[in-house]
Length: 117
Image (cartoon, rainbow, N blue to C red):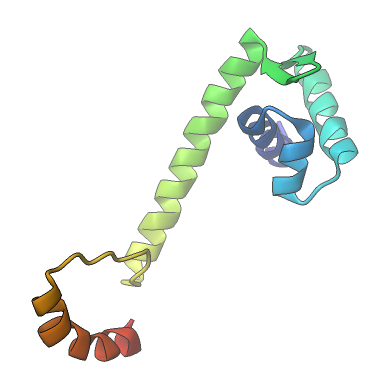
């Protein structure tokens, strides 16, 4: 199986639409459609029921979507471990504090925090 086709399949299944998946992947709707058709042909099965309101996964499509979801989660976890191994700080930090503590103690120290991270 082709990794690119699986990535496109996952985006289509997640979006429920060739057009929306194409937008998120920066591909045309027709390019996405061709990739899905090629994947279906290589597997010898239909992965989506096509309706006026969008696409619905077939039973075989559900099986493949479960597999691609697991793959995506594992890839995300691997990427996070790689980032962690480099001791790189990433992500969003939210701080909630009282007005007095935030104004008198925290605010004067934020400049150093921004410089460092």
